[in-house]
Image: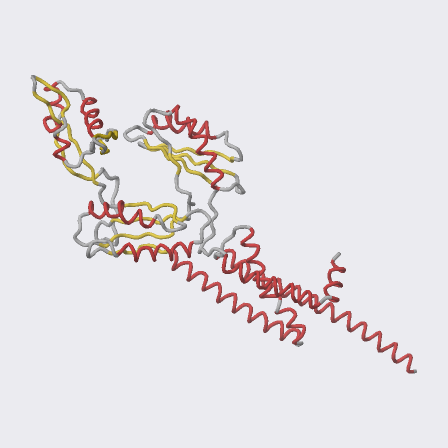
Amino acid sequence: MVHRIIEWSLRNRYIVLVLATGLFIWGVISVKKNPIDAIPDLSENQVIVFTEWMGRAPQLIEDQITYPLVTNLQGLPRIKYVRGSSMFGMSFIYVIFEDEVDIYWARERVLERLSTISRTLPEGVAPQLGPDGTGVGHILWYTLDAPGMDLGEQRAIQDWYVKFALQNVPGVSEIASFGGFQKQYQVTIDPNKLLYYKIPLSTVIAAIRANNNESGGRKFEMSDIGYIIKTDGYLKSMEELGAISIASQGGLPVRISDVATIQMTGESRLGIFDQDGEGERVGGIVVMRYGENAAEVIDAVKAKMQEVAKGLPEGMNFDIVYDRGELIRESIDSIQHTLIEEMIVVSLVVIIFLFHWRSALSIIIQIPITIAASFILLNAFGISSNIMSLTGIALAIGVIVDNGIIMSENAYKHLAERYADWQRTHQSDAS
């Protein structure tokens, strides 16, 4: 079979050249389409299920949430195993699928199963899927540089302006906020006053929930004019919260302000984010979606940051803490220079070793064609251009020319034998 292919190629040299040119052009196009990253994504094909039930102990989380979810999710198709983790107020389930399974098909299967499991969980508990990113999806970290601005204001700008704007960038799965204070109304109840008024704590909680809610309205027509009736039930200030009536004693209402202290404060924190020892900062982490081009996503996020910066308060700017784009550029440039140097050195060695330009050219021309064709296979298998894949291509250059040198030497050996036979035959005929 191999002999027939070689024989056909020798008889149809122009067709072979055209096919090689087409393969090279296809490879060049594949180089431009191939995703670029600094490190290969070797993470498992997983779907994360996150469940929050604040204020509960880890053992209760394990019994009421983690164990039921793990046992029910184990029956999913094409699954390898399920891991669960319980901590104070939170549960994490890691559903690991087979490597060849499409990630979005896997997420759909998990969502279908969660729709049936949720009915068996405690009231108010709603499992959620984690972002469609991987363990190496953190491509950019940034902070908001705003000297003198309150950390609560910075976190509000991050959560309600910057985050929503950057999430619209194609290829971004999530913007995870960190640092600062998340503003909230805090009601600190005095238990002695509850005992004095004989009001249970559940009544206070129910009153706050009932008064911080919209009610439906309707539309009616009168004198050929349509009127829309609606209510505005959301609390907008601490005064409105304090004026909520929770009970009536002696014909007088008992309000929230009578049994509790109300203040605007930040949510309880388990840690802080300090940058370079200069104080606390507020910022976010850009998580890339599964299978995206890291270099393109980073450039798109930076371009979006320039637009978002126009709407920031005066004196506030973006400060990029971690940028994988720099690592990608330095890594790829280093390997590209190494590839070029290796191609030049190998070509010189082949020319000096063979000392015949036509033979050397037939070997050297294989190097760019083979490298370009390798990117076709990288795209076919969904492998990005990274340190490991490009280094493998660099190491393979020596193997490419070795085969060509062996074939050329073998051809010359057969030609020399044929020429020697021809000379002997010619001399015998002449004699």
